[in-house]
Amino acid sequence: MDINLSDVQAELCGVFDAYEAALVSNDVATLDALFWASEHTVRYGTGENLIGIEAIRAFRNARSSQGLARVLSHTVITTFGRDFGTAMTEFVRPSYRQDGRLLRVGRQSQTWVRTAEPGHGGWRVVAAHVSLLDLPAD
Image 1 (tube, rainbow, N blue to C red):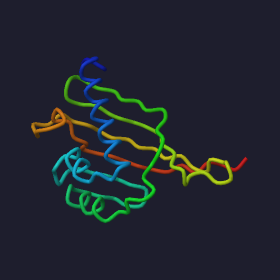
Image 2 (cartoon, helix red, strand yellow):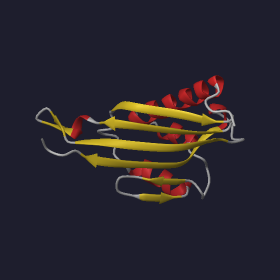
Image 3 (cartoon, rainbow, N blue to C red):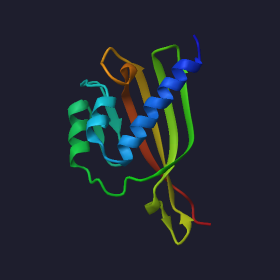
Image 4 (tube, one colour):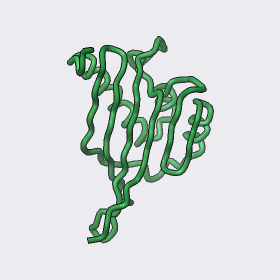
């Protein structure tokens, strides 16, 4: 199996960047387009377990568009062959800081598959998990 073919990895990195831009700007249409339109799609969030694209769409449409800005770090995008990849990243939102101290870090993992769906090279998130890690006080 070919790991991180340069053209495939570049393509998935570009799609991941499009996802991130859509997330922080609350571009629900693009977020919808980047998730696999299937009852088998899973998104586990910090306070919700969403099974199926309809549950994910309902969550996206109901959530606030405020406080979505974040800074990513330690992003690792790995591709396996031409049609499968993972994207792992850590993130910090301004609200995760208090009095100059970082209180928590977010973590996001995504499983991407190239589908026959049009747009974005066919790449779709088929599973995602978002969690928060509270940091110990010094």
